[in-house]
Length: 93
Image 1: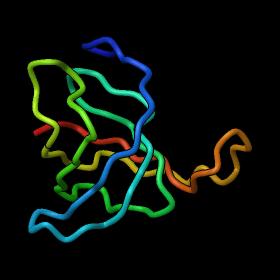
Image 2: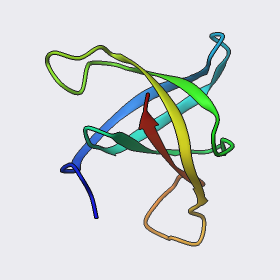
Image 3: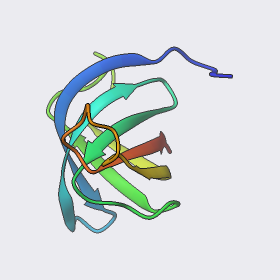
């Protein structure tokens, strides 16, 4: 069961490793108070800590930089409705 409501949202984000090493760009698909789902052309290991830079904050009172941990990463190639190879779920820290 979900604890918080999920909001559909589309936008481009930049994913960085903890020490500002850019991993790449991804498309934000949805977010909630607890986390977000991105689609990307690359996979990220479960448990990895990353920084996500948004073009604008998700909430008016929040930052456009979010520290996250990867909770899942799935191959989406079998799903014909997406151009991205991977779906990645993040939880906010």
